[in-house]
Length: 138
Image (cartoon, rainbow, N blue to C red; front, side, top):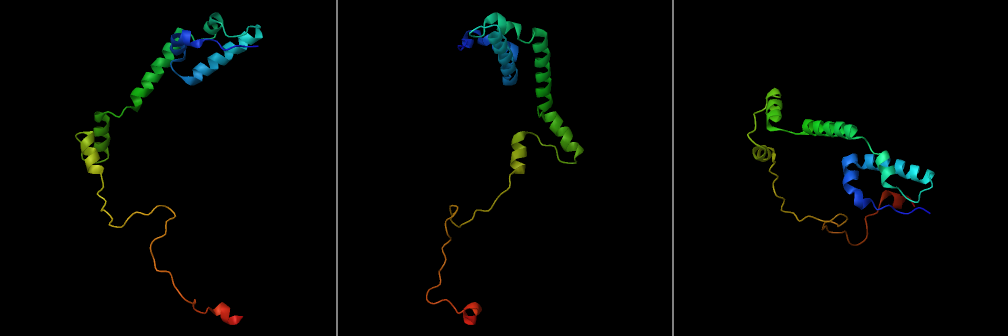
C-alpha cells in the first residue's frame, strides 16, 4: 500500500523546480510517483523526486519567458500615451484622470428598485371580465 510523502519538508525544491506553476508540479509528481510505484516503493523518495525535476537550466529559461511575458502585458503610461496619440485621442496625465473622464453620470431614478420577480404596483381589474369574442361564439 502506498503512503503520502511528506512534501512539506522539500517545499523549496518543489517551488524552485516548478516555478510555482501547478501544471509543471503536477506532471513532475505524477512521473515521480509512477517511477516509485514501478520500483515497488511505498512512496516518492527524494532521489526519485530529484531525478524527475526539470533542470536548473530549463527552469531558468522558463522563468525568463515568464518575466518577458509579464513585461509585455504591463500597461505602462508611455505605451498608453503612444496608443492614445495614434488613435487621435487627447493624452491622459494619469489613471485617475482617465477614470474621471470615462465615468458616465447616470441620473438617479426616483423609483424604488424591485427585486427580481416582485410585481410592480398596479390596479388589478375587479368584477366580471368583458365578454370576449371567443366566449360569444360558444
